[in-house]
Image 1 (cartoon, rainbow, N blue to C red):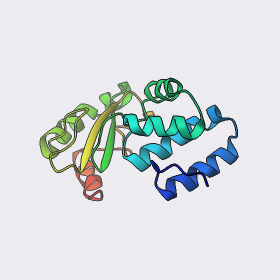
Image 2 (image 1 turned 90 degrees about the vertical axis):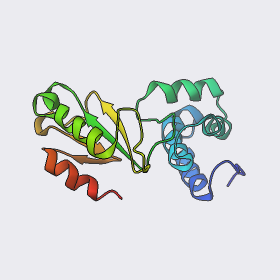
Image 3 (image 1 turned 180 degrees about the vertical axis):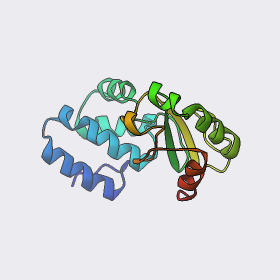
Length: 159
């Protein structure tokens, strides 16, 4: 394994597997950005530079890819990231009420983190659950058919 001290040993092992699976550097870029985000917590400039060096890509290529896609974070977040869908289907089914609950009970405003650093709230245009909204993702877990009570129950599982 190559020596890249910016990454943890576990992240380096995962990056090696990615490089084997996607040999050209650019093909490995998006999976490598996911690993860097998990390892660093967010894609701060040092993380982007480390990915560029590891994949032997121009830093601008890495930065432009990372900023194009919404799944990459560019600022520190809480331990759990909530992505509340506010597309038409979810809005009609009550997403606006759920947003109010998240703001009132958890001190969350879109784009911010709760005072206890437990949650960050992101508003999502669509998370692909139109038939079972309102919906939200907490980290990578999909929660559908939400109402006020269910949102509180769901979030109690993320401490």
